[in-house]
Image 1 (cartoon, helix red, strand yellow):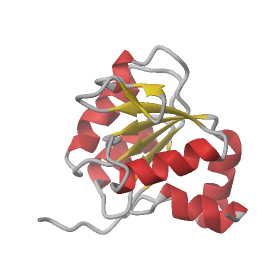
Image 2 (cartoon, rainbow, N blue to C red):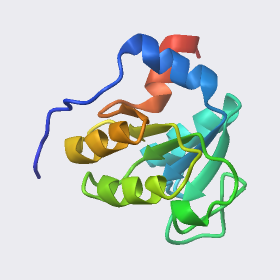
Image 3 (cartoon, rainbow, N blue to C red):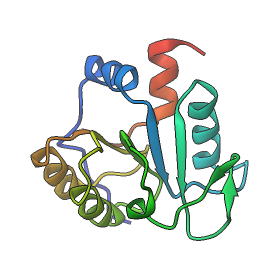
Image 4 (tube, rainbow, N blue to C red):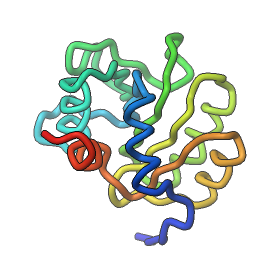
Length: 144
């Protein structure tokens, strides 16, 4: 496994603004299994008021929401993409984001870094967070 240090990352004060502005989140790799981190994080984000769009290759519903096979299938507005997949998938996700005009944030979860994809996302005008857990960051900023 290749480890990469995140050279592109938003600062802590910007992360708080992200959560204040975002309303809808596509969760790439949202597992239907409650014990998985992606499920725990998405459930938490949903519980604090965010609209969740699960993106997963199987299942019809996860956390009571319709499951999509890709970001491009989602016709509703998506403010943030929160990714729980291997780092190389971020390149594909940025390709999909580039075809949309609504996504403002690319969030790569704890342990996920892809500086090349992050640079591309920044050039598209997105805010980028890498190697951080959205649930942990939300709790740090807004309490439990």
